[in-house]
Amino acid sequence: MSEEINFKSLKLPVSELIKKYSKETQIEIFNYLNELDDNNKIAYEIAYDNLGSSFNILRSNGFKEWKKSK
Image (cartoon, rainbow, N blue to C red; front, side, top):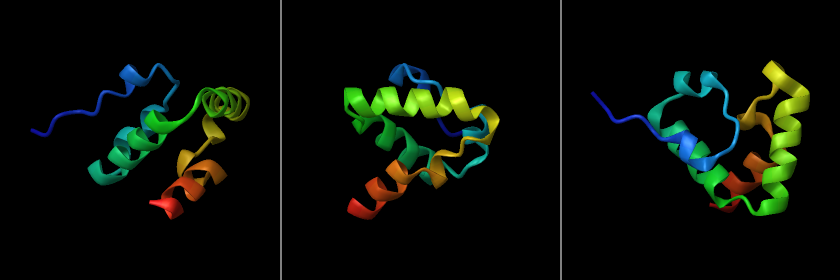
């Protein structure tokens, strides 16, 4: 059994839907969130709270730009 990624260590809200993504995608999301500066963490939390279940990190501009730069 593969080890679960510890999203709780980020101290950011994360949807349980992330567990449905591939391990590779989960690692990308973890790395993206882990690299956010304080201002972007605040923006992420606001977007997550305001959009609720319709929030999809893979479609967020921040994630798309981060992925392009990698």
